[in-house]
Length: 87
Image (tube, rainbow, N blue to C red; front, side, top):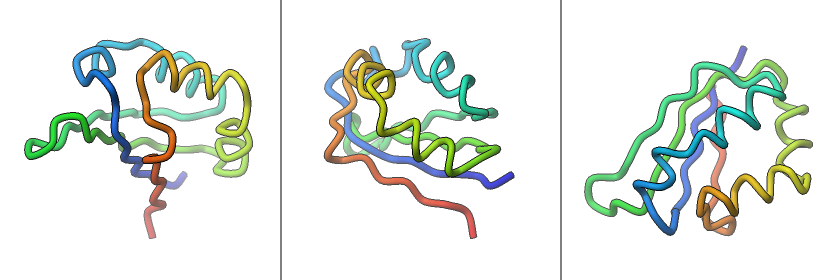
């Protein structure tokens, strides 16, 4: 099971940290062990480290309306989204 690191910017860091959305939507596509991070130099830049059972499934999910809705709810700035896969 690969570990994925994702980083992006958000509109409101405290809202993003408190949001239950990422657990709700990612659980449905086999993502587990989600850990959150905040850049101490630029607090609206945040990140996740998570274990992904099926990378193709996650990639397909990220193109859906439910994924877009979850990002909007969490205040994610989509154009800043970067996925890195453990190698």
